Image (cartoon, rainbow, N blue to C red; front, top):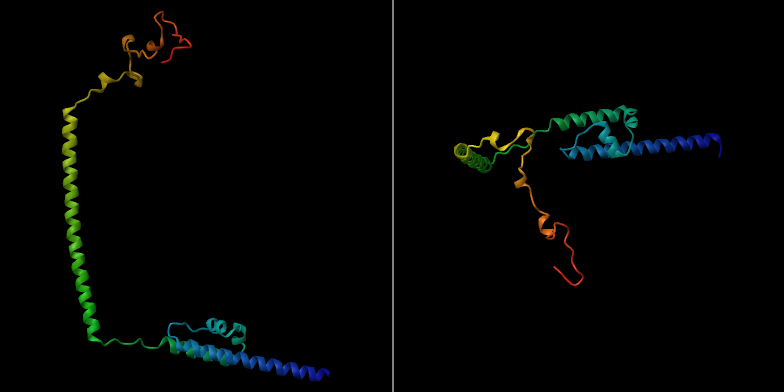
Length: 177
């Protein structure tokens, strides 16, 4: 094969590949146009077709096709619902919700008043308790926060473990407690 033949075969291969990519872009654009929820732009079409955005930008006719399809997709009117039963059903549902909201607002107001009444009763009760048991802190605490004990008030925890002589009590080997 000569250089010229190899070059011609390579050019044919590249042209075929380019044609296939163009058909892939057009197929992807047709599928995207069928789905009204899908956005149509060069990036989305290129991704769906498996080509680069550079390929689309290098073919101005593909760019124009995509722009036209995107414009048409933006201006598709939404379906109109003229079903009176649907409208009446939604209106009835709105009335039901409004009634539930009113009932809940009334319940909230009632609960708030109950809370306030309970707070008032608690305040009255605690006030009566404090008045009935007036505590004078100066008679119960010494300066420095420590309580003073007299020698007679001191604990005698060890006295039960001492013998009659005052020393430690010894247990014989045979005796048990």
